[in-house]
Amino acid sequence: PVPRWCRREVDEQHRETVEHRGEVRVLQQRSPWGVLRVGCLGQPLAQHLLPYARTLPLPLFAPPDLRGAKAGVPRTLSRSLSHEAQRG
View (cartoon, one colour):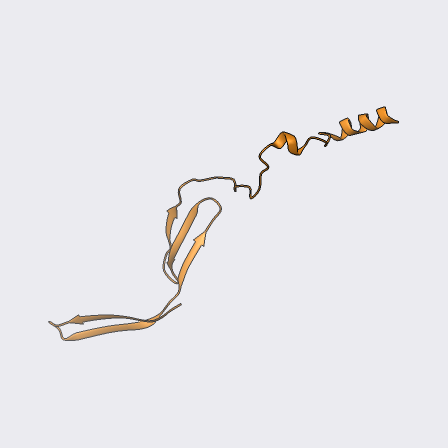
C-alpha cells in the first residue's frame, strides 16, 4: 500500500473544494503466457502483452570437449548389457 495520497480539486467560481485522502494498493499480475496486468485495487486492471521470448537457461558449466568427457561411459543400457554378456 502507498500511504497517504491526497487528491484535491478547487473550484474558484463556485467556491467549492473537494479533497480525497486514502491508501492505494497496487496490483501486478504476471502469467506464464506473457500477460501482465497492472492496476489499483478496486479499479479495472490494464492488460499488456509482453514480448514473446521462450529461451532456455544457459548452463552454468559445460566441458570444452563433450566427447572426451564421455570416453569410458557406455551410451545405452542395452549396449552395457551386451558388454557384460561378452565378458562373462
